[in-house]
Image (cartoon, rainbow, N blue to C red; front, side, top):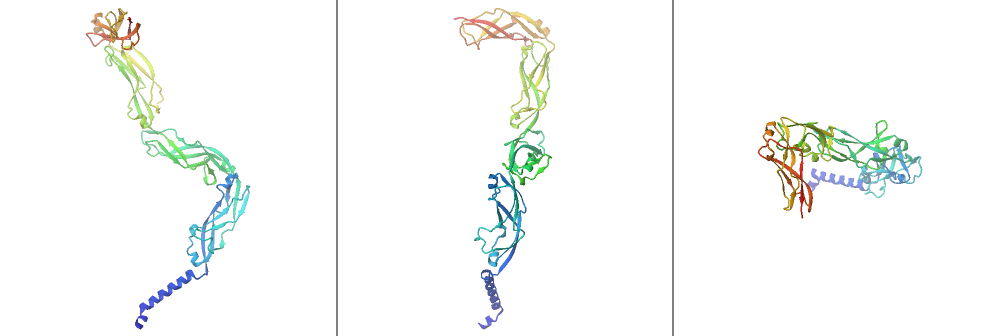
Length: 410
């Protein structure tokens, strides 16, 4: 046993035990105060955001925004102090008038401490905080928008809109009066779809400079912005022609459309699958001579006409054809009742076609057929639309519109 007491191992164990005992003594029993420096302790102003505003006041400035403190306390307390949770508070709730005030502050320790646990303030960079209190002035400023970047190729930007047109800005009167508007900025890089997002805003003075927002209060922190992204398409203008013998496109009928196309912009949904714009449906048999007329250019809902033209001019001309009039008495009806009497005995029919074809046509080849399917009334006389048929040829056909008169007896 004596050999163990004299061994190196025994001496090491004893040294460790002595060190632990001394540490426990110093940490828990030794009350000798120690100092700790805490820099940049933030200041919280109590009542600045609510009480002062209710009284029509605001804090315009403060002499400092943080303080440096030297604290002292027992070693075991100071070692447990989390200095990042310390702040100082300045009470503004008793202020009722605009002027300059020199106020004391209170050091606030973490919630885990019972009051200050015996910690004392040894020194500070300042012991008072000077604040300037001014009357709160408010005005509404317009919201404006701007963009950065570019949309994807084939797209353009529509008119930007906001969830609010104005922002209420409050602060010192002279500073607020110098604010011109609030500006929101939206990035368009590669956009192909509408942008709907909430963004921060800047306050801009009448010289176009950005103003520090920290000196003001605003009724909103962000603005919700909608930026339409429109697809651009060049669309040909077309006409749906109804053709018939003697009124066929090609050798007989030539036409032109001016402008031949328009460039439009719209949402992807509104332009989806749209490859052309149909101006009108024209029955060529009802066009009796060379003619030019204008029609409006219809656009899909929500689309914009970037070209600017609102009407198109359609020109129709006839070539290598002539016309000839025939007196026709082969008149009948279809889809009529049994008690119908045709009052029209004969009528003049004009055919259009090549001269040599017209020369071979006789009146007996021409039939006029009235369709009574649209007649729903009882007895009486009615005008019935009629179709003209030319038997024996497909190169000539009637032009114009025709009707016959019938009578339904009881």
